[in-house]
Image (tube, rainbow, N blue to C red):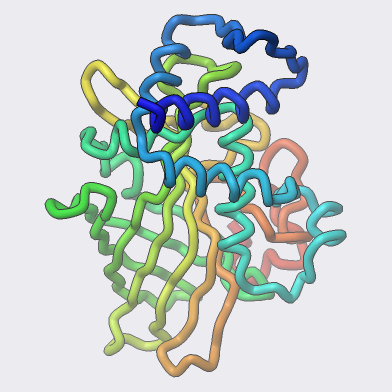
Length: 290
């Protein structure tokens, strides 16, 4: 029982301190929450693994909030020559998720994940310092029977007309459910790591590695985790975002590689749009004419 109490009060402490209008707690009173569903979620989280919650909480508290889509903040914080932003991305998104939600991975890991909508489809992004256009197509995804948080995938990439088949794994590391200022019950965030390997027999092949964020909706009644694209088309929309790097099999050529739905983080002066992504004229000849 003491185990659950410690976890419960840890989560309450983090949520109360993240509110803009912080309320003081006296005589061991629990802060007032609005919908009953929020109370249920907090109790549910209290039953999850304490060490896991504490570890995620430490990442959130130790990470500075730098907007990965803001050119000024990027230039003040990082070199444009930086190749790998995968750890910065997962830490930033963990801190962001902790500011309005709670980790629920232990409670939902056995739910059904709608893999087709969460991961499959065509996406575009950038590769290298010159921001060449890369097309990523995930065509198949299967959930591991042994580990439900491991997703086996295959697909193909296209860069400058060169196509490479790949296969690999997406590992779900964190799942957060929003409990403050949510638009609808069950809104959440999925945070993952990925490793894809291209066919060594094909030209210009290599490996992809990095981190992934995806917006989700958790249906506790039906025990389903679905892709949430309700805000698609809105200003600043970004989703199913992969941040990492690609490297050839010789280990000599390592490049920044970022792709996703709409806006792309850590791309500095590549995107000059305000509400939507607009590619700078500087990079349009690198596959972005259309």
